[in-house]
Structure formats: structure tokens, C-alpha cells
Amino acid sequence: MEEAATGGRGTVTPFASMFPASEAQKAAKRVEEKIGEKQKELDSIIEFVTENTNLINLVSRLPDELNHDIMVPFGKAAFFPGRLIHTNEFMLRLHFLMLRLLRLQRVLWKLGKIMWRKSLREKHSKSDDKNNDKKVEFEDDEYARIMSRLDELEKEELEAEAEEVDAKDDVESDVEQPDAAEKQ
Image (tube, rainbow, N blue to C red; front, side, top):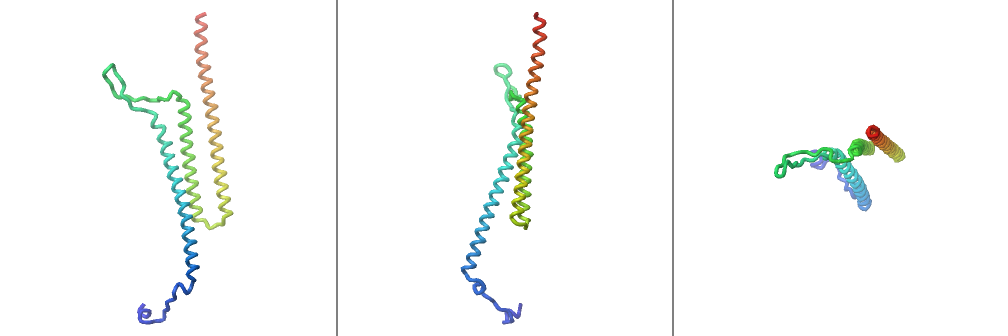
């Protein structure tokens, strides 16, 4: 350190003598463009994660808001606090809706995990673009498989709903028939 200060052996080479100024400016511009591209990608991923989290929160809150606190009239002038429960007259459909929402929540969590893993893989991966394309195709296939399974489950639920309604109608008609027989 003292040798350099007193005129030792070190030499200072200006940066401009190693690289032309125009080349350095071009390189800096390319780096800034890449930083801008990566920032846009990061912003879109953050926006997706935020929207996904908001959707998950909304879906998880929906079943809780089916009950309502009210003031129940008691006579002409008196009221007391009460609670309306199961206000939806289509309880069976509501039940299936809640099941679908739970499944949707699981699917959204899975998609979030897939996106997180994908971003980690891209960050730490040193493989070429061909391997990345294969990973994206695999994740697209997995998403398609999940969505097709979800469609199958919804069809099964609709069939079960139709069977329950038919069974309920059969029971009601069986109950009505003995009354008709007693009248004759």
C-alpha cells in the first residue's frame, strides 16, 4: 500500500483505453434492456401471485358469509337478535358449490406451487432453452390433466344431484300413493 502511494510499481490504466466508449455504452444499454425485461417478468409474476392470493382468500371466505345476523320481530314493537342460517333455498346446489370452491382452492394452490417451482427452476437452471420448453410443456400437460379431472368430478356431482332429486321425487310419490289408496 505504501509502495503504491510513494510511486511503487503499480500502473493505472484508464478504462477508455481498454474498451472504446461506444462499445461500453452499447453494452450498458443491452444490460439495461435485459434488466427492464426481467423487471417486467418479475412484475407480472408478482401480479399473478397477488391475484391468486386474493382469489384464494375470496373463495375461502364465501362459505362463511351464508349466515346473517338479524333482528327478529317479536310482536309489534319488540325485536331480539337472531341469525338466519341456510338462507339459500337451493341447499343441494350450494353444497356442491362449496365442494367445487374447495377443489378450486386446491387447484389454485397447486398452480401457485407450480409457478413458484418454475420460477425457482428458471433462476437456478443452467440448461438450454430446449429443456425449458419441455418443462413448460410438462406443466401445461399437468394443468390440462388437473382441469380435465375437475370437469369429470363436476359431471359426477351433477349426476349424483340428479339421482338424489329423482330419489326424493320417488319417495314423495310413494308417500302420496298410500294416502290416495286410503281415500278409495
